[in-house]
Length: 110
Image 1 (cartoon, one colour):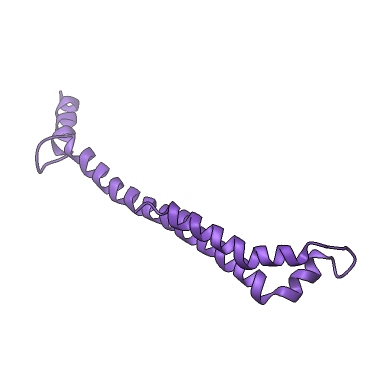
Image 2: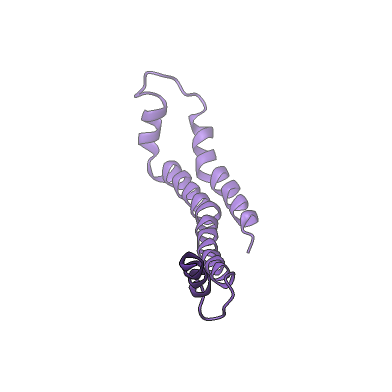
């Protein structure tokens, strides 16, 4: 008989504000929804903003700033011949940033 009384107390005390045992579950779901909203926002910023902007900055840096280093890296310090270096360099300088920018703009789903 005492066990039954104890289990009734647990059920009644699970949510003393409304008397509904499911309201505590709803409150937990509401908290996890806020957490999910934060994670969705972080995912959006990482995948749709930071990734493309990082790609643009890397292409611009390699094409305009680090030109001597890229030629040495691609040609293995002159050991290999890279006949399309000029074409590749202009792709890094112009084509890649423009294409990534287009992907960035079209990928934003505000």
